[in-house]
Length: 266
Image (cartoon, rainbow, N blue to C red; front, side, top):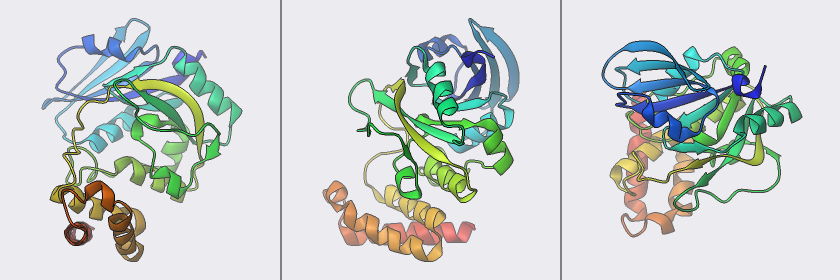
């Protein structure tokens, strides 16, 4: 089987009427496209070298989109994809070679470059991803073995992520759940895609909603007791980032409110 047939993109998008935008991804892989558009439907499309399963969904929320893609996935290696990415030439070979080199890996985290400006600063050495380092991983850097995820029955937490009640943290929660299930995650210092750094769909500044959501994420990730401690750590460690818009007391108050609110949901 060729690399392009072993790799499958899981694409989340919204309100699309046709497939013309797909070419911008520079994809030579098969793909599943979840188009949240207020209607339901499922169509198989052949588009150039790509065999595409196009699913229209009336659900709302990024994590619901990710889970629907996982439910329909058939590829060996599944690539979390947003519609503002451009994959580099040969990305399938990079992915397949990384998993061949590291057969114990259930998930590999790759590099993604920003197009308009720097996305992240990456290390240049391979490493195993821990709970702590997983907090710095973005969803579009993640490639997973389908069989590992299916066997462990890992899914995205649908109350978190863009379009959900709590608008952040879904990829970190996903990776925490993978690690708790014994899955092995590694970092490979190779670029697989470039990202258009447009205005975020969820981050609108360090406002009250941001801190409410941050408190909920803390409880989900760390549990009832450690979650409270991590709220304090976050408030102190990141104070320089948000001090122009909120003082530390209000930041703590709002995160605690979100922490309590999430406790009511569980």
